[in-house]
Length: 331
Image (tube, rainbow, N blue to C red; front, side, top):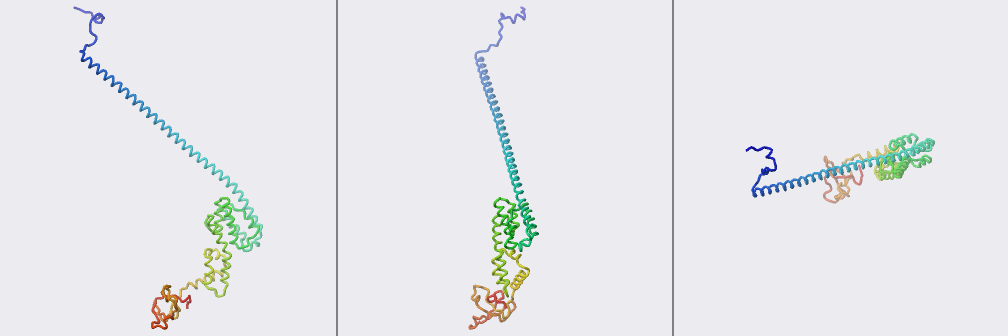
């Protein structure tokens, strides 16, 4: 029997369109499909969570990057503000220094004019015009300006040149203290010959105050007939801290006399026969006793002690460095 192919698709043809399974297979297939569907849902949910987590991480990283960028920008702006403030402070300081320079230049001009107008004879033993110019040059090198010293120009100092320098140094020190000017402090240090600090300059000024009295006392002792080194040293040791200062004030004859006295005193005397001696050890009883060298034995000598005259042993043997001259006598 022949059948038309078109008739196979007709609705009236009772042909099965799906495969029929037994109930057991159908349930198993349904269970597999359900598990597959749940697995797909689970995977879909994990994918969504992963995507959300990744998106949140990227968003957080972007936020952190933006925060870091803002912090860097804030730091740069802050540094720029600090630099600008420093520049402003420097400009204000330079402006103040310029005003101060103009004022001090006018003062030094007034001082130089006043010094030039004063006859050099009125300064006596203080400062010549040439010395004043040299001093001003030294001050200018450290200060490029000076202070108002017209009072010194109008009235010559009553003391010597060192006293004039001390007064000028103290005036500069007072200026440095009042105006907090380090250049003025350096200039005062140059004049007084000290470290550029207020304490050092004040201490140096106190030393120079002793100078006139030191020169007077030393000249007085040197003028005595038969002056010895001990007499000079008893006075000079009180002014040892300003030795260079008073030495510069003495005449050539006075310094030569001091040198001669020192050379005579420092020449070593040799203990020999006839020398009146005592023991050199202050812890020996013979330190206060008187003795006389009666014999020489090379590096050693024989000493006869006055305190042993009534004893059986009247002499003893010593090295020369164990003995000293009796009460400073050198024979």
